[in-house]
Image (cartoon, helix red, strand yellow):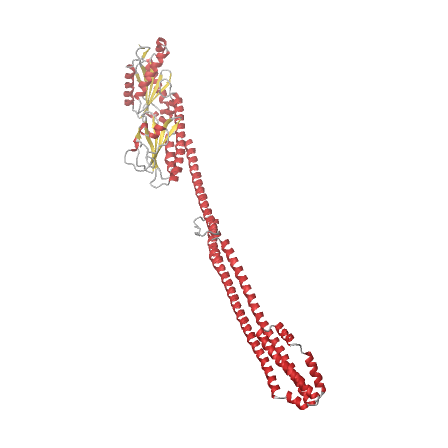
Length: 602
């Protein structure tokens, strides 16, 4: 029941009890007034009866005095008293008006008749005395008969008073009892009103209002201080306090939701800051190794608790090779073909295990119970890498959904950075590679020469330089056209590239001139490699338009650091040896002259 309803009922009951108490007090007052009226009536009737007896006794005294003394003044007084008397009916009517009952009036009527009978005897006695017969008059007025009649009249009046006293006493008793009962009822009503008031104060104000409000006030104070651990008390009653408790619970739930959203927003801001910082670092990477190191450091922070691997596509082998890992992933091969992963096939995120049943990727192996996520690194429809993640053992659905969003953003940033690096490498490769032969060009040679000579001087290791020039190259162009000359250049470039695929550098300096740098090669090793290249060039059979363009030979100039001088003059020394080889008849290997050891730094 609502407090307003209880209060209204309590107010109504209090008003009703108050009105009832007032009514009983009025009834008690009315009973007391009836009691006082009965007493006043009795006093009035007693006074009237006493006056009646006094009148009778005065007449008797006046008549007796005249009979004894013969004084006419007594007769005059007697006549005046008698004249003042009214008739019996009039005197009875006066008693009726005052409130005498019928029985009382009957007794009074008999008394008045007796008094009137005495008046007749008094008249006879006075007449006798006036006629001089005083003895007779005295005998009448003082005789036994007159005395008995006078006593009878007094007795009848006493009877009237007795009846009157009985009725009056009964009326007073009834009025007193009624007044006492009404007073008792009034006291009961007042007590009930006071008790109801105390109950309202205790049960409504204290139990239903004060105590709950104090508890709610403490919770509201804590909630106002953003302490959402405060749990509102449960007041199941349907009233204003229950409504307040429900409102506070809703406020707390909204506060918790706001706090959760703020935490998610803060976490999202932190993650976006991490992604932004990682993106900045990725943009500053100069090589794939730098990119891999950035991913290895940032991925565990962005994908918290998700173990994983970064795979980069190796175009030459057409395979996904692991570049780095974090948090020790338990599954996925270190290298696999792109067709082994459904994420790479479909070009979108793939979750082969977990809540949704799907086809597992071949690179995962068998017996993996933990949910995994594969996110392809794609640029313009081309898969250039893969991010592989293993979910933590305990992760909430909302955390998984939020983590997947970050994983996609992470993959997008890494994919763009990797694509930029590949584009940069491709542009650099285009700038550093001869388009015709596929060998490194003069720009690449100048950079490599500085690096290798510096390293050789620091490590005191040998560095061989073999200059190569195709013999009579102009003849191929003049006899067969420039296309045939280009075919010869491509064939010689292929020989040089194959000769130093793993342990050296092959460059085309321009025209028909090539150079080989062989770090760590001694003079004997370099000479053996030069002879090998020479033989391969001699064995070349170059065809152009289904015709063989003729034998191909080359002249070689070989110089080795530190045998043939300083590192910075190594190319000039080898070039001088090449000139001697051409001057001596071509198709031969000429080694530079050994310099004085004192001229070699070291």
